[in-house]
Image 1 (cartoon, helix red, strand yellow):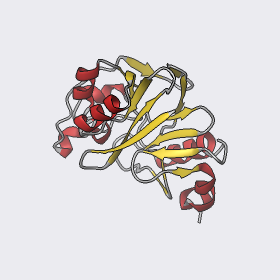
Image 2 (cartoon, one colour):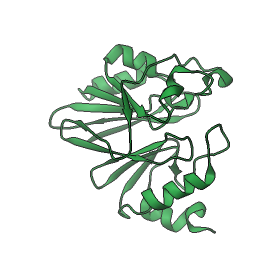
Image 3 (cartoon, helix red, strand yellow):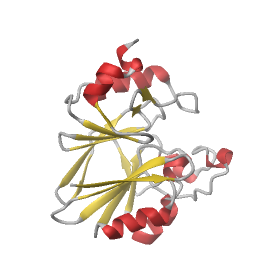
Image 4 (cartoon, helix red, strand yellow):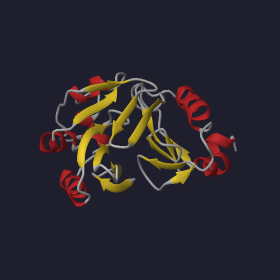
Length: 209
């Protein structure tokens, strides 16, 4: 599997370019800014992008969505609970932040347990509400999890923005993510990668310390 992280936009959002080595089919996850850097990664890896998948609808994860979609013609996929945010700068908080994120209509409205395929890659959608109502994590095979703004190394996503709910977030993390294999590598929406085992041991929100 090809997996390349691009730190995108002024909020240093982790955008991931992921591809199947055999077929060169791929996906982009959370194009938060710096469209040119994202396109260069796609080109460098020789990928044909099938989907642009969004872990949620906040502006810092969709800042380059419109430009990237127009240039590579991929399908935009987001959970149904956040799909409206792509068409409303107020809902995505783009208007509040002064972001230039343009309006985009989702091509695919995801739901829990959906399976997206790109070549030999199978990406399972795990609905993890809390940061936003439609937040999702993306599980690839048995060893990789893209956790968006649900789970970070040593922390969790904020819940003080519209639609956020701390109890829902913690329920999502404890029942949907901490049940995954300990050696699952976690690639979050901001910051460094971690593992499920490390978060079970070190994350104060998970351990209760």
